[in-house]
Amino acid sequence: MDERRRVILITDGDEYAKRTMELIAKEVGGRCISASRANPTVLSGHEIVKLIKKAKKDPVYVMFDDSGFVGEGAGEQAMKYVANHDDIEVLGVIAVASRTRHEEWTRVHVSIDRYGELTEYGVDKYGIPELEEGRITGDTVYCLDTLNVPFIVGIGDIGKMAKVDHYKNGSPITRKAVELILERSGFKWQSTRK
Image (cartoon, rainbow, N blue to C red; front, side):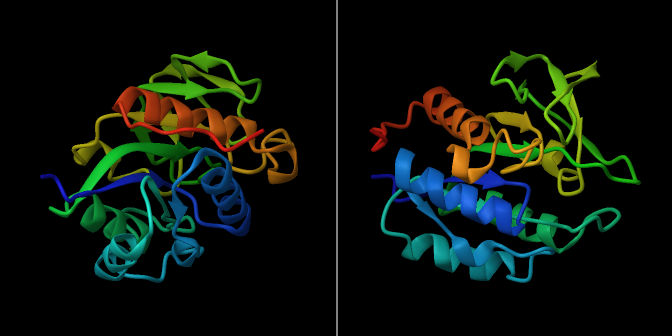
């Protein structure tokens, strides 16, 4: 029997991301590891895995953030540890776009723009489609291409996008990304949203 915990990785860890993922966990189901919220990530991958194992139910939402660090920062080091851990099954990744000076990017399978439309193009931090197909720019996405993860969804800045994705509005873009990952993974879930 597979005892692995099923996890969705989020490449942002600010306060907006935390509030958004707590809302998603409440409405879509699962648990948000709120302690993983930091900008940049302060917990080690080992510490995060321990918290994931203590979560009461799956999917477990975990946030990682490099705070603009060039190359592989603390958030990406922790994310690599979690993604490669034998007790963890990564259902998918929400790759969050940012305006980074260093142009770190990753491939994505699909993006969701600020209007909730699926697009083969990447999106910027405001959720506006860009000109490049299948990639986004962000500050905690540098290592995603090296990870064996099944599905990566690109979105604009989580919980923001000119307030379209604000948690007070129900964070519809992030919610759609989570639901898409769950649907693609075959994970059985039932929304608690009325």
